[in-house]
Length: 202
Image: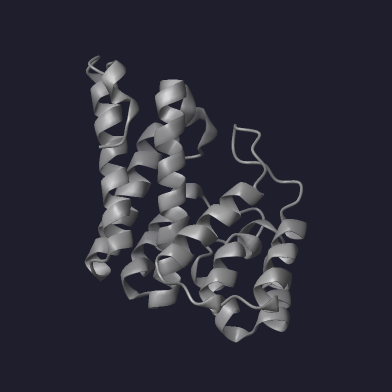
């Protein structure tokens, strides 16, 4: 069962990300944090992992080293280490997009199980959102992403491959399925064959 620590983390996450919205959508960022925590819990997360799921973007987007120390103080070393493992940059400005994403992918196969669980939950939530938004917006969607179309497709394929190399799991297999769906949609659109039947995930 989730304790008062999880409720405290939920409040803390909402405070940290109160003014953020999802790229290009206007949706409060809280939706992403709750979605990632939900996926992690559905795939067996313990309380530390669920708290880290709520806070997985906090170091990267909301304060860097100072936020890391606050997470450690409030929720302990285990949570801080998981969030740290899900962070691809803790400085501002961030390093160039491609180099930090390559570094992030490279560390996935060697990451602790808890880090991979939270990271996969994050990538699955994002990949599902991209599929949904791509069906509505087409290539206009890629303007939201620093990596553009090619970089974004590369990143999710690379992440999926890296998670698979670390070991199969139902969560890894679901991420692979959604990434394949995205790739198939983009390929079909590029060939001019995306029809009305493309509205559901296979």
